[in-house]
Length: 211
Length: 222
Image 1 (tube, rainbow over the protein chains, first blue to last red):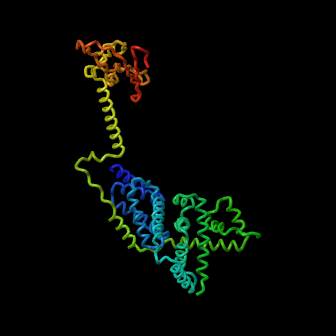
Image 2 (image 1 turned 90 degrees about the horizontal axis):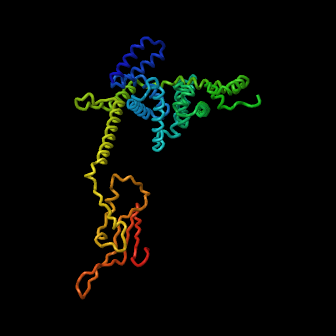
């Protein structure tokens, strides 16, 4: 424990010497992980602050309900705490993506067994209609686009949705997405291609919808 | 343009996800085909829109709520066991300690077994020598020898014997069939009994196999 704390302190000292935002962020994460391993709750909370947006937004995109996304985020951070000793500090980001996807997959399976009433096709269509209505006045607003895209994402199968979220929304590379999804780059390309085509057709249908 | 490129490939081209081999061919076609070019443009716009709405507009209060919930659910740190700081050892040290304990236990067990195997001869089970007459009974052997069978186990447990299990069966028991002494009704005196048959019992290393040899003074063994 003492050794880890000393390592963390050394990392924080060395951080002053490093240049570049990404490098600094990595060494900060490393230091936070080492402090959190040593049992510092503030370090763990700081770690959560660093990654809360990534985890919650990814979960919210993959899952359909905001409440489920919050539950998933909590579960992800609890797993992070449990496995802190085994995670390489420089790989925390991709580890969190992978665990987020896994937790969301578990929740989606549970959802399939207990389908929610507010996720049926009528609800999606109503949302789509509302989004389509708001575009009449002065072109497509960002909020409208967001709503249409969210509806289109929800209509995708889980694997395609996850691949698209990681690649197009989170901005990861195809190879990184494949690693996180524990799949091959070719499979991910195929999923992304299919998802993009479906989303395009979905959005065009929404914008052409007669009032 | 005779044929259009698959829409899926244009979708991949929009995100530069196509493999290097296909990229140039698809890009070449799209640059010369107006409809494919329009499709590519729509994909690019949609991709930009998706990247722009990365932020879901989640309120800061929701993040705080999640963090507090997680911190409340964190397992409490295990209390220290007593006042022995040496008890909290690293996994590597624990492994070394366990190995040493296991080695000590193995050596101790081996030494204990060895000590019991090399006990002094006085404590070992005494083996009765087989009387020569009993071992090789003749037809006219006296009945006293035949009345003393030697237990097989006492021979088998002799620790100094270096024998294998495949040795030829040993003569364990040589007992003549019980013969009643003949009593002369006139003199009421005991006449020396003449045995009719002699039975030899041969035990092999297999306890389930016993060879019984019957020898008659009047005829050959059978």
